[in-house]
Image (cartoon, rainbow, N blue to C red; front, side, top):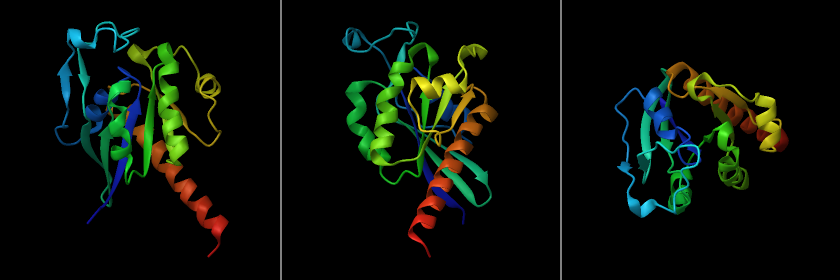
Length: 188
């Protein structure tokens, strides 16, 4: 029986969380996408994602087998402030997280970074390079988000399974390193 681990996919509105879950999931993903309506006018900031017509209202769910003995359950969080009340429940039991970032709107990543840092949940930042645009380096994103050196920053295209999988592997490595550091600090 494989070990199942929970990973959150988080980030700002329209950064590609649903796309990432869908691109790596080996099962048809559960999505709670709903069409955006006039009710969201003035509430949801569409700056940089003006063409967005739907949004996640609860969560996305997918599954990926990393190795025969290791399965990841992926939970994509909703991106708008009005749905953040669900994040605490979604984070229960999570081994780690991905914070997806869009360099056109890096400020939308701060809340996710703060959320995981304040709860001690290991995470990696996946910089979603839309249409192959790499207008920032990983070092520049690390500096802009004021990330600890132990937090991986991976340039990726979440539409491509292999690219998105690299971000998940970075989360697993970060969680493993943190667990080993705790064991070393506490002794045998």
